[in-house]
Image (cartoon, rainbow, N blue to C red):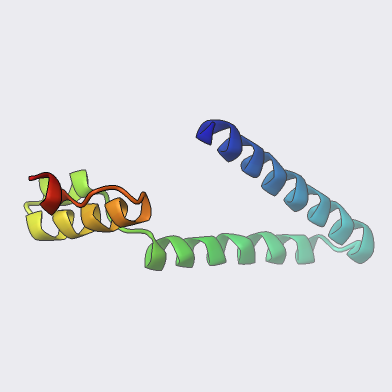
Amino acid sequence: MRPIISTISQLLYVAVFTITIAVLRYVTKNINYLIAFGATIGLISSVCIHYFLEESPLFLLKKNRHLEAFQVLEKIFVINKKASPREIA
């Protein structure tokens, strides 16, 4: 079920973005605004990914940062409402 919901949300995002671009293009008649709009969306996405997305536990383990990997796994377990790694071990 989760892949279906993910696919639908991505399609809705693309549809809303496409409609927004079309309306902006119709209203402004200037390509510079479209370029600025696209760059702004990309910049906002990059900042959000940088500050709100955790490193992968596998990446942290490969870099010998075991404590950080364990902390990220604990956050994942809390979000997924599962037993924590401490309770499993």
